[in-house]
Length: 290
Ligand SMILES: [Zn+2]
Ligand SMILES: [Zn+2]
Image (tube, rainbow, N blue to C red; front, side, top):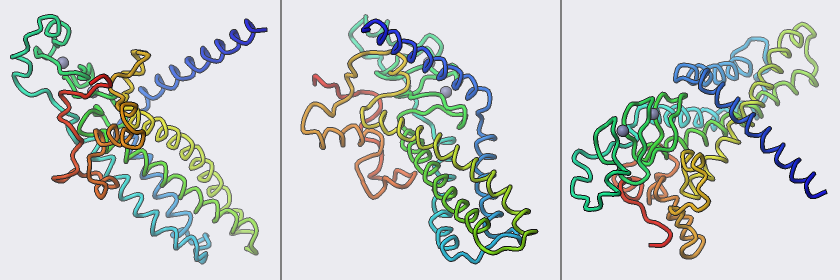
């Protein structure tokens, strides 16, 4: 019985792994900044067209028009965060870094032969960008940029606003579909509007699920001070997760500060300003045992 259960769990793991590998393969093929911007524009323009501009649509619904105000704000924040993720340098290793290291072993282990320089902790060489990146999380094909120490906040915000704008678009388009289906309309108007509205609602439903899952994974990584690269290494103890060292609420904040900065007023915006920079320098990292 026990063996069967283990066998089943293993099978599930293998299936999940296969699904994840296939998803990553597809992601590498489809993902690039142009397709990301196209998807965002398609989502925005089709929702706008089908609920307000389309002459066949019913734009009289007060609630739809009211919801358009927060939706436009979300799209502004989404485009802003996405562009900042694409164009912000994720973090370079300073020139002559590590020249004063005394430990020969560390020097050997943390030297990048491609860039010909020493690498700080949690710094990785990205073969796509052909350079070393501070606290590299992952190379994002969607952004055409690495996610690292200086743009991880923008990536988190981009995923947050993508998820929220997809969900709100879905609500608006669903209200529109209900209105077309259940209110007295001319049959000609109904037949012209309902099919594109339902197709868009389905697209938004899928987008809401995918973006919400990705956002939940990202926030989990941020709160536990982990990167996608750490997950690949399958190290059982994450020495950088400093939330367990003191009181829970404070420690979660410590991990959070290293991505989002210490100024809460700047957390919702993809900017740093003077006080909103990620805590630390990206070169040295506090560990659990410190
Ligand atoms: Zn390198
Ligand atoms: Zn890269």
